[in-house]
Image (tube, rainbow, N blue to C red):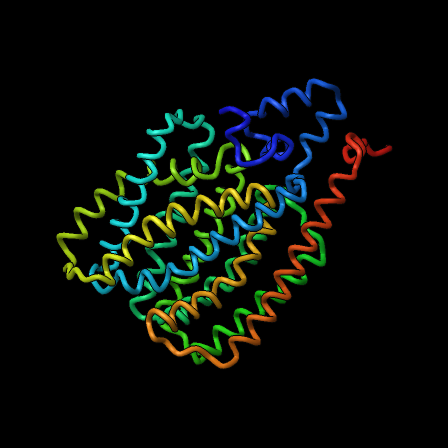
Length: 356
C-alpha cells in the first residue's frame, strides 16, 4: 500500500499495532536510531495535527449520523422482510458495492496477518450487530433499542484502550461516564423503564459491535478505512449469500416502498458508507475520542423515530441533548489535550530505562 493511500499521516501509522508491518515512513524512522525506534513502539493515540483532528472529528460525526438512521431504517425494512432475510440481504448488497469498489480500484488482497482482524470486524459490525438488533426490534421500539447505543461509546472506549494501547486522561473517563449515564437515564425513561425479551439481544449486540469498532479502528491505522470495511464485507459474502437463500425460502416477503428504502439504507448507508467515514475518523483521532461522538446517536435516533415512524418524543429530550453535547465537548477537549502532550514529548524520553 502506498503511503498516500493511507487514511492517516505516516506519523500516525508509526504508532500502530506492533504486530502490523511498519509503514515505509515508520521504517525509515526506526532506522534513524534507537530513540526513534522506541518512540515508534510506544502504544498511544496517533498524533495528529489540528487540521487532521478536525477532519477526523467531522468524518466520525458523519458516521454517527449515518448510524443514527439504522434503527428506523431497520424498522422500515421489517415491513417487507423477515429479520434473517433483512440482515442477510443487507450484507449481500453492501458486499457487492464494496467488492465493486475494491475491484475498480485494483486493491490487492490484505496481508495474511490482517485477515483475523477483518474477521472480527465482519463478525461484529457486518453480521453480529445487525442480526442481534434486528431480532431485538421485533419486540422493542427503536427508542428502547437506543439503550444499547447509549452504552456503546463507553464500551468501545474501554475495549479500544485495552486493544490499541490508548490511554485517555482521567478527565476523559469522567466525561465519558457522565455522558453514558445521561444517555442511559434518558433512554430508559423514554421507554418507561420496561425491560423486553429483546434486551439480551441488545446487550449481545453491544459487545460484538464494540469489538468490531475497536478492531476496525486499529486496522484503519495501517490501511484506508474504506478497505477495512470493504474487505470485511467481502469476507462475509459467502455466508450472507447462503443465509439469503435459506431465509428467503423460510420467511415471507411483502415488498413496499418503506421496506425497500430501509433495506437500501442499511446496506449502502449504514453498513458501507457509514462505516467507511467512521473508520477514517477513528484512524485520525483515535478509538476513544471517536467513540464518544456516539453519545449523540441515541438522541438522533429518537428524532428520526419521531419524524419517520411517528414514535413519541419526550419533553426531556432537549435537556438530555444539551447535557450530552457538554459531555462530548469535554471528551474531545480532553482527547486533544492528551494528543498535544504526546506530541511535545521528545523522542526517546518515554522509553528511558529505569534505574536498578
